[in-house]
Image (cartoon, rainbow, N blue to C red; front, side):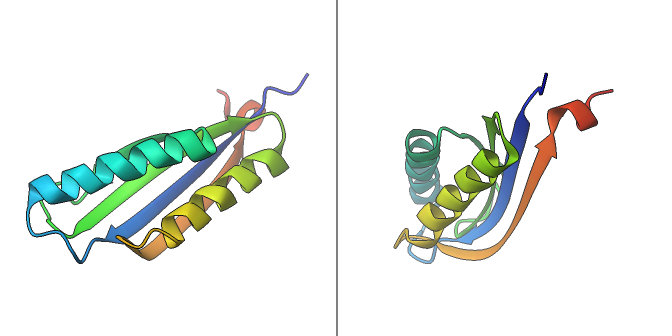
Length: 103
């Protein structure tokens, strides 16, 4: 019986309109909430915490099939790319088979 797949997307983002950490954090919260609603993903800010206009986020989602996980990552990527407040500087995607990754 298959244990499922985990999709992970990490993206470096630039927020040109932010002029303070407060503005940046408000936008990060908005993006995190949108990705959770739109893609069913768990999202965390993982780097550039003290930079006003930079952010690195990682998101994870779980699916029964590898293709479903890849589709979820694609939806998340499109959502980030079409957000007018952010510029995606780079992104990495990975789909992990839970059974192969288990110790």
